[in-house]
Length: 119
Length: 108
Image (cartoon, helix red, strand yellow):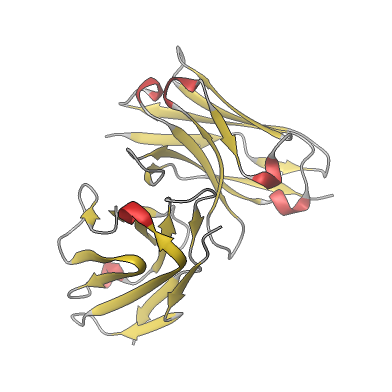
């Protein structure tokens, strides 16, 4: 079964950093564009970042530009989201999601990992 | 930026009934780049429909999507107990892509 599994969430103080990971089972990240989508408690999902097929291009929602970095380790088939300068409003469940083709819909989601930014 | 509105906010129905959910865009979604997702409590969203009317892999045929331009509809022909959930539409025609506020389908 094709699956995505996130890890790395936790509680961090405002201004702190965290790195999220996403491992894939039974498919290769090299063949698909991938994304991070977050959902604050009781809120609507929000796209955070996308990395293109092969990893040559990256895209970010305005609120995380300059603070978050998406990347892929191809040999390890792992997707990352490095987060710096975290704010309370970054508190959310972060999902790793596979991008559809050709549009940016999300056709496979992981279970998510909770990030809580609090002092 | 395209803003999506969904109606109704909550739909109270009984198993076996037909559910009709609406998603309206603030401007035309060209190429029908609109998707529908189902989300149950404590779970990730699940893709149901993409490109306005294409069912995702493994989605039962009681789910159907239609529409174009600014008006889109998700129809569940006969509600099963597992269909009671929140449904979101998402446009991916225009950057930034965006989700609607959701429609909750609950048991009457």
